[in-house]
Length: 173
Image 1: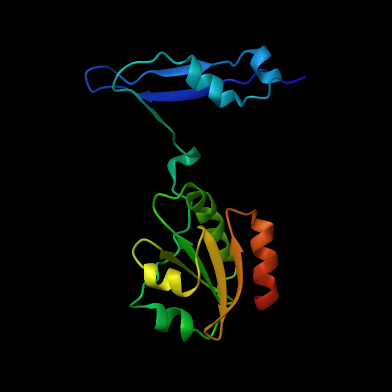
Image 2: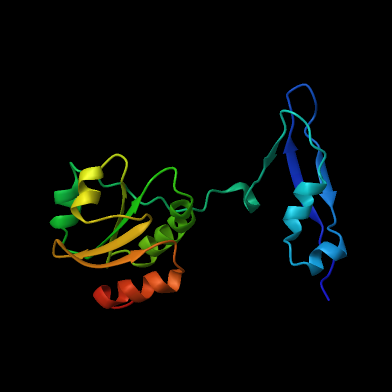
C-alpha cells in the first residue's frame, strides 16, 4: 500500500506578498491512479496571477557537469584531430529531449575522462556540420575515432545505451 507522502512546494509570488510555502499531502485515491505526488501538490496550490513554481535541488548546488561546445571553427582541432575518441552531442536549445540527456552526457564525460572527449554542437548555430553528418533528429550522439564517424545513437536514450556504444570504441570506464 502506498504511504502518504508530504511534498513541500515553494511558490514565487509577486514582490508585494511574502513567498508562501505549502505542505500538501496527495490524496490516496489519486495515488492509486498512478499519478506522481508532485502533480497533486502543484494541482492543490491556489492559482494566482504572477505566481510561478520554483524548484530547488537539495543542497542548493548545481551538480550538472557542463560539456564544452564545439563549432564550425573548432571542429577540425577538437574532433577531427583528436587523439582520443570523441562523443559529439548534436542538440538545440529548444529541444526538450536534448535537455533530458544533457546531464547523462555530462556524467559520462567525467567518468570517461582521459579516455573519451565529449562536446556539444548546437545544430541551429552550426547547420552545415549537422547537414554534413545527416542529422535529422536531435538529440543525436555520434562517436568519432581518428576523425571518422564510427557510430550514432539517436534520441534521449538510457545511460546504459550510451555506455554500450562508447565501450565499443573506448574499452570501459
